[in-house]
Image (cartoon, rainbow, N blue to C red; front, side, top):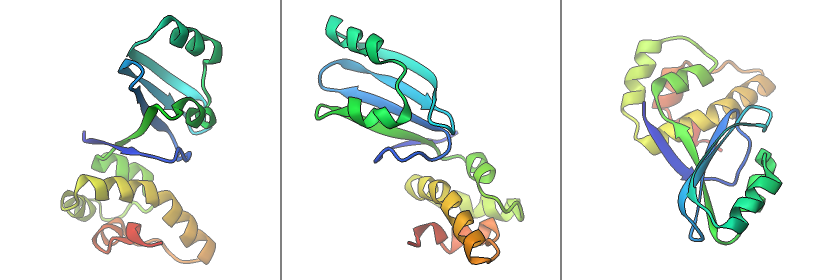
Length: 149
């Protein structure tokens, strides 16, 4: 399974997973949120000071919306995205031509795969609002509809 990380403005898109790192400690913390923005998993692999541990205990659990607050000027938050074809197939709402779609998927780089997955929900919404049928997944990928505004 391929994974890619990208710096994100912390928009809620389905289930999300983030890595928080900072120059103020070594290591990282991993946060995973469900579709409602509620924390579903937390992993601390950071060496924290007593003050940092106290902050963590006082403010935990963090809601998805509060991640930007803990980031501050000295931290970095990266969203982790599963770039596997399975992840794309689960999110794309038109389940036709799986083999052809997988072949088109293999031709994309990881950044394009991440973008295709993240834009699939918006594309489905726009099609529904405009009363048009979604493209088959292969055409969505080959024609790079995920690059459209």
